[in-house]
Length: 323
Ligand code: IPM
Ligand code: MN
Image (cartoon, rainbow, N blue to C red):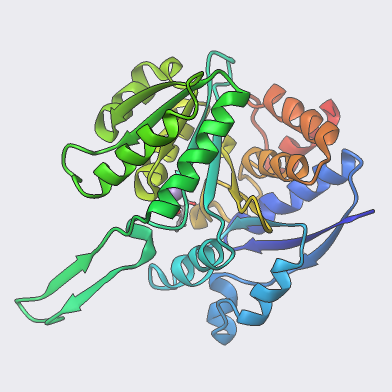
């Protein structure tokens, strides 16, 4: 039976790379029953709609969501990001942001588990005395025991299916409140997983290791904002952001799959965006849908052509040729 999947191409290169991802999925023999959602900066500029409660309800009934990228230069920063992407992550409680990285030469492969619903992303804060010389802006970081613990537990479970190695990344030497909650929770859960070797790095040091010694990592668990920054770096040191896929998981509900990269308006409409990150995100989605054989074939094919160059369509054709 076809899996019912919601498609949000979004803005910029989003629709271009998702179209190729869907073509690859079809070529791999998996039937999807797709429902298109015209959402993103372009839609917002057309009629003011960002995301509705009705759409969110519909999404709860789907097998998965497949998203390209959202964000348009003519829309003020934050409107679409907060109103669409983050709202989706929060309302659907997509609390695990699963970002795997594979170096093209196969020299290392690691996963960042980014907490996806809290931290500075939660939106706590505001202005006082706005537009005066005494303006104050605060931006809080929300860390709940529940949110921190479920991300850490997920990471420990994942570590047991890989190489039994997990690193916590934070900034406990400065963020002494949130850092303490993360560290205590990590250590408590670690006691339940004696087979998992653990490590801790401050996020600034982790940036150095990502560049100089990524082999030290297998699974990393970290806070939302640190994870955002670290995973762009992860993309850059393992073949480029054009290769990095994401799963936004709610292990108890509907999950969403998207490339790490953004809408890249500077190259939109030219057919030159690398679709491999979207194709690999599609493979992660198929894995999630139980189509493990097709997922493995797409992943292997995409990795095999990852150092090739070509147009968006040519890259997808290369993948299809290897299936
Ligand atoms: C990502 C993106 C988003 C984020 C933006 C578009 C809100 O950068 O998925 O990493 O910061 O999480
Ligand atoms: Mn990001």
